[in-house]
Structures are given as structure tokens and as C-alpha cells.
Image (cartoon, rainbow, N blue to C red; front, side):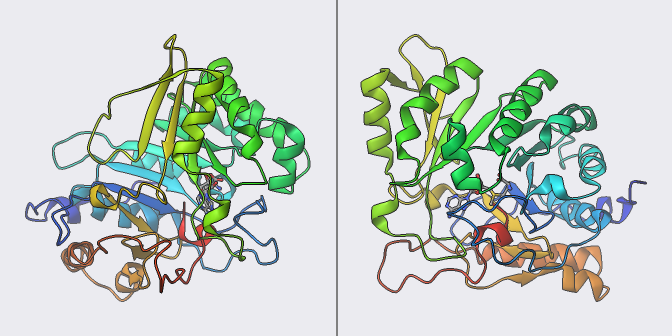
Length: 345
Ligand code: SAM
């Protein structure tokens, strides 16, 4: 695919960094390139409905991401749905890897995947310029894993992909695990051993009310404190210092320094005050929070012929209105109109 001309963007006057009305600097963009998925994880999809939103062309994602990068975004994560289902994903990575921040730096370019199709794509993605990959994996034993994904053979496919990604140099390799009480909370200690044996960073994520069905309740969330205590009883943990203010994970290593565990606790220890993220959905809408009740139609404006300057001004205005925080667990909390798979996790 030919690189689109970015000359229109470089002609923009230098704009201030994307900063919201609370002073949070936004430098992290998550881009969903499809809301289709080949897994039906019990806590995410009902399995009844597939894609709900149209996909843009790969060159259109590139054009929209280019606008954000010119405004100060320096980290781009490609997600979905399942992004590896999307034809053209390697070419998209190759073109994104050519973009430069206003200070001339390449992007920190990451991708989140369920790993089912990663084994053969790991080396091409690395060669195209992908910096890192995060693989979602919710159990370390095959039976539990396949009960969650509802896809036969998924465990061996994902394990092979993790090893292929490590061999391709897509490191540090992160494994995301969403814990649900009664589904996979018996996997915690096994994941600690897996992190050490497979030389991966395992990050436990608290379950958020973003599922298609109605599974979420405060009781099903396994809180950070419980995870730390349980792992610590099996293998003593040492907390690592945070690397920057917008880091979402609390990080731990083991007493011997081998292996790393992270815990992302949006429910029990919300980090909205340090949030540096916005999202672009697969149909080109900006979401300034996972729990936004409103979406901002960037692609609609592009299609209507808005100039690069107009689109950039729209992004800046939209980011200024970013929500202060999510309201999970508070009276009157409203789930967003899209679930996680259709927003882009
Ligand atoms: N298909 C890709 C994958 O599996 O990584 C990318 C999309 S998926 C929606 C991104 C991440 O969101 C996965 O790690 C998934 O486990 C997580 N996720 C999905 N629903 C969630 C929820 N309700 N709360 C917390 N994490 C969730």
C-alpha cells in the first residue's frame, strides 16, 4: 500500500499538546480496526452478534492517526475486536511505523490481540515495525481457557503464538488476564509461575462493566489486594517503582528478581486522574473515555470534506471535554452504548 501524503499535516502550525480541561496531557491513542472477533469470551461477547459497526479503509485509519500524531500522540495501540482478522494489518503497521512525532521520534507502536492468528504474523509484524504486542490470555490450563473463549484448540494456538512473538523479538511480551470470580480466579498462582517460565509480563485486569451481556457485579471482580496477597503467599512479591505518572499497572517482581506481574485495577483503584488515553473506534468515532456516553464523529467530518486543520481543531476540542472519571460502582452508573469488543480494548 502506498503511503498517503502527509504533507497537508506537516503544514499545520505547531499546536499545543492535546490537553484536556483538567490538565491531563493525552499522548496515548487506541485504534480499533475491526469490531469482529473470532473468540466468544464469556465475559465479553454473548456470541450471538458479530460485527456491528462498519470498518474504515486502512488508508483512512492511517490518515486519522496521522492527525493525532501531529497533535502530540506518541503511543498508538492497534486493537479491536480482533485486529489480526483485519486484512492489511501488517501494511498498516508498516505505514504507522513511518510516522514521526512533532519532535521527530518514531511512535511507540503496540498491538493487542487474542493471539489466535499471531503465530505466523509475529515475524512479519515485527519486520513491519511493531514495537510490542500484548496477548490476552485468561487461563493457563487448556480446559479453563477454552471454556472462556468457547473455541476449541484456542489454548495451543495462543501458546504457540506467545512463543513465536517472543522469538520474533516483540518484547517485553505482555499477557493480559481478566479475572472473574468463579470462572478463572483459580489461575492466579499458575499465572505467576507462567510469567517466570515463559519470560512474559503477566498483567491481571479487573473486570469492568463493559460486557455485551449482564455478568458484571462488584462480587465478580477480583480486586488487586486479593491478587497480590494470593501470589505473595505462593511466591513472595516485591513492588517495582512506577515508570511514569500515567502507568496504569502496579508492577511487582519476585524476591529473586525473575519475572514480572502487573495489576491493572480500574475498579478498586481507579487511575482516571492520570489517564492519558483516547480511543478511535473502528468506524472512526473518538471516545474520550471507555465509559463515555457520547461519541465524536471524526470520520464523518473527514468524509464530509473537512480540511486537516478543521479535523485537528475538532480533535483538540473533543479532547478538552474528556470526562473526569468513570463512575463504576456509583449509584446511577450507566453502561456505555458500546461494549468493549465494539469500542476497542
Ligand atoms: N481481541 C483482542 C484481545 O483479545 O486482546 C483485542 C480486543 S479485547 C476487547 C482487549 C482486551 O479487553 C482483552 O484483554 C480483553 O480481555 C479485555 N476485556 C474485554 N472485556 C473486558 C471487560 N469487561 N473488563 C476488562 N477487560 C476486558
